[in-house]
Structure formats: structure tokens, C-alpha cells
Image (cartoon, rainbow, N blue to C red; front, side, top):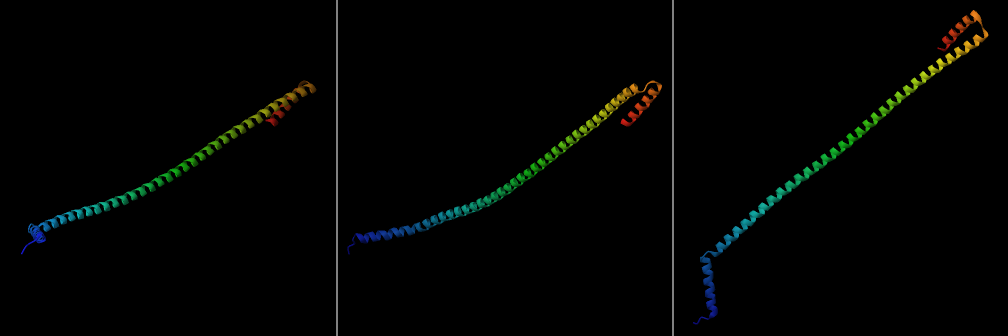
Length: 161
């Protein structure tokens, strides 16, 4: 029986597979692949865990940002209310100041008016007395004229003051 080349190639192939099985190459390759798969699985689990942490942090920061925005809005609203209150208070103080100054000016004007009226009355009385004195001095002479003059001047002064 003659063995040709394909037969020897087949024998070599069978021996090669037997050697590979004897050397436990499939188990080694399988364990290497399993180890690699475990490593990849661990990396995927770690990535999922990190993603969950990142999402939790993102949610927390969003919550904090919303709270900060709400606080900022509250601060702005409070500042607006305080500014309005200060403006109202300033307006009220200004109105009170103007009213006080107006009352003071009106009081001074009334006082000056009253004083002017008193001065005019006094001046009128003095002028009336002088005129009566002159008229009586010309018309009445003697002791009787002086007595009448004194009585008349007293009457005029009493009526005008």
C-alpha cells in the first residue's frame, strides 16, 4: 500500500490536533478568553456604577442649581420689596418735610400779616390822634380845649388799640 501525500497530510493533521489536545491548548485558550470576558464584564460593571454615580451627581447638581435659582429669585424679590419700601418711606419723609416747611412758612406769613396789621393800626391810631390834636387845637383854645383834647385823644387810643 502506498501512501500518498494527502494521506500523510491527514496523519499530520490528526497528530497536530492530538498534540494540541494533549497540551491542553483549548482549555488554556478557553480560560484566557474567560479571564478576558471576566475582565470586560468587570469593566462594564464599573462603567455602569460610574454612570449611575454620575447621573446621581447630575441630579443633585440640578437640584442645587434649581434651589440656587429659587434663592436668587427670592433675594431679587426681597430687594425689590425693600427698594419699594425705601422709596415709599423717602417719598413720605419728603412729603412730611415739605408739609412742615409749608406750615412753617404759612405760620411766618400769618405772623408777619398780624404784625403788619398791628403796625398799620398803631400807625393809624397815631395819625388819627395827631389829626384830632391838630383839629382840636385849631378849633378849641384854652383850658377847656386842652381838657377836651386829652379826653378825645384817650378815647381814640382806646378805640384803636
